[in-house]
Amino acid sequence: MGTPDPSRLLVRMEKITKRFAGVTANQEVDFDVRAGEVHALLGENGAGKSTLMSVLYGLYRPDSGTLTVGGREVSFSSPRDAITAGIGMVHQHFMLIPSQTVWENMILGVDGLPSVLPKRAIHDRIEELSQRYGLAVDPDARIWQLSIGEQQRVAILQMLYRRANILVLDEPTAVLTPQEAERLFETVRQMTSEGHGVVFISHKMAEVMGLSNRVTILRKGRHVGTVDTASTTKEKLAEMMVGQKMVFKIEKKISSPGRPIIECESVRALNDRGFPAIAGLTLSVREGEILGIAGVAGNGQAELCEAIAGLRRVESGRILINGADLTNSLPKKIIDGGVHYIPADRKGTGLVPNMNISENSILKRYWNKPVSKRGFIVWREVFSFARDLVSRYSVSTPSIGTPVRNLSGGNLQKLMLGRELSDSPKAIIAAHPTWGLDVAATKFAREQLLAARDVGGAVLLVSEDLDELLAMSDRLAVMFKGEVMGVIENPAGAPIEAIGLMMAGTRMEEAFASAGKEGRSA
Image (cartoon, rainbow, N blue to C red; front, side, top):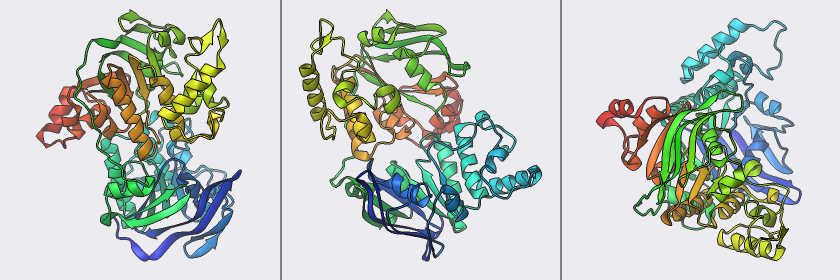
């Protein structure tokens, strides 16, 4: 980690205010970045973090306040202005063109290029930056050919190629293996040692505590405080974020698994491009247990969830629910068979944005009593159910008639969890149920899944948060290229290094042998 220079401010944001349609996203927020530091930005969902960084990156213009870069007051009209001023942002979803090569992506949007591109010079510059920051990548590889971790390296290199001196990293470890995350941290430390400033946005408190020099906390669009990381704790930071004390420890009863509820037998399925996504996968989830699925994004986890839920065709093999073969059955039949699906895509697959809370609450029960009688919806029953759901799951909303597009991410997730878990389902598929949620909403979601498991539910939990999987799972399966590398019976005691190797394609026995006794315990 670099040694910050308090006397050298790379960026200073003073009294930044930004409003949208009467909603104040930022209210007179102060924020600065020093040379040689990692400055973490924390806050609940909807606290204003993204808006503030969007102002810094030129995506939004503030309604009031000043922005100073390198000692000069500036006003950005676009990201191009920000990039010119030395500010780069690596978004959670990389802004790369899959069909183009690394070197072609590197020069996207660069001004002043000659009509004949100097490919050799571009290659040399990429090689120089790669070696300097430990970001090894093939300049001639096409983006779609790269792993998620390699794509992130390209996204960072792209900003460094444009001579960014301040780099904003938005949830940068969400899609990385533990080994890739550690390599990223080494890159960040190298950058700060050279005087770069890094803004680090993450919900992972351990990363914030281990990597940052300072932490700024936003709450409801306002600046709550900025503290030196060395002088605080994750509990204190969480309290500043939510306004009350938070308990991070998950209280989990010892599981007593029963018979298999979800069974996948030699399942094969294709992805949306027609390529194999699930390659002869076999696994089972028993009643009263959480089976976690670990793996880097894009290794068949999404397709597996969709296949079980009836949203993706199985090419071969069988899927059994509660002993019944429901392979390639219609989604309604699978729902009637007791499968409840919490998808990662809240506003696409999970909810209908333009429909209100009441309507979304019954999407999977509108044909059943008491909501429906003789083919007609009984609206008083709908309203009663929706009000009860909103109350029990603490969904913050003006009314049950509010369109769900107006809800924050955390409240969308609570609504979806309430809808899927309210009937004590026997089979639950939870795909990234806490993705992008703040600490309070994350704690709530995890508690609900554990409660469902404790009353006999079989929970298939897919997550890219390894800490979450280790804390929640009774068993842990690791996927790579559509296959299961192994199922770990005691995830909490497994070496992190071994799990990381499995996520990269090493079979369990070999991974554990490689990790050996020196493997860092989870």
